[in-house]
Length: 282
Ligand SMILES: C[S@@+](CC[C@H](N)C(=O)[O-])C[C@H]1O[C@@H](n2cnc3c(N)ncnc32)[C@H](O)[C@@H]1O
Image (cartoon, rainbow, N blue to C red; front, side, top):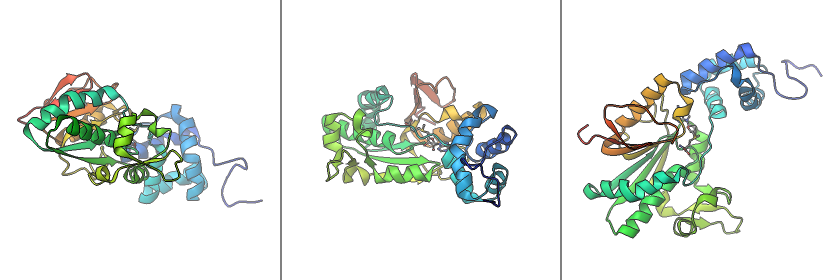
């Protein structure tokens, strides 16, 4: 059968190596993401279906489309971002939060704001809220803890707000946290949902760490900026760290991924290898 555009009978249009720079330029301008020719297979795998779905017909036309169409550009970014996350990921940081971070912060204030700055499907932020709530109960301290989660991808934000997780997601949650902070699905299929009390203390909104879109006005006591800096070049990394540090209250903390360390910021002091404190007077 003749078709108006070139589609391989066996699948989506094929990306050519000389088309990678144009795609990479849009990914960089939109989200700070870096791609080169070595990522050809990744780009093909992530974007092939998008090219078909958008009816662009070829990667050449798709490049034109994402350059002029905001909505498709958002789909493009969604297709390229990696959303791997889990509850209690890099759990030493949550232990630190319980044993040192929260005791210090709650000495002086009773409203604690957590910010999960590339929150993906929500597990990082929900873990922070669970840890804070468990600490509040155990310590008898009188404070409330709220959460803001931001991400460039609207698809993951919708999942974070829904707060429903499958059995596999729950593997890293202890029985005591499960009992205290999750409701079981009625049909007992293993799915669990964060309890309404925690859900009422969380907000999820689109925010771009590179452009700053959606991030103004955030003031947090603890900012999680984990497993996202690895996608940026050093200039973008510096810009993003400056932006997130601006969103931390004096005396508050920045938590990065364990491999995302070794940077300097005039207002930050390293407390542990991937935990930094913002100076009190800044
Ligand atoms: C690997 S996940 C990390 C999730 C979580 N922070 C963790 O450590 O488990 C990376 C997240 O960064 C988001 N992301 C990528 N570029 C971004 C940008 N420019 N602004 C905001 N979020 C971005 C992706 O959509 C994705 O959800």
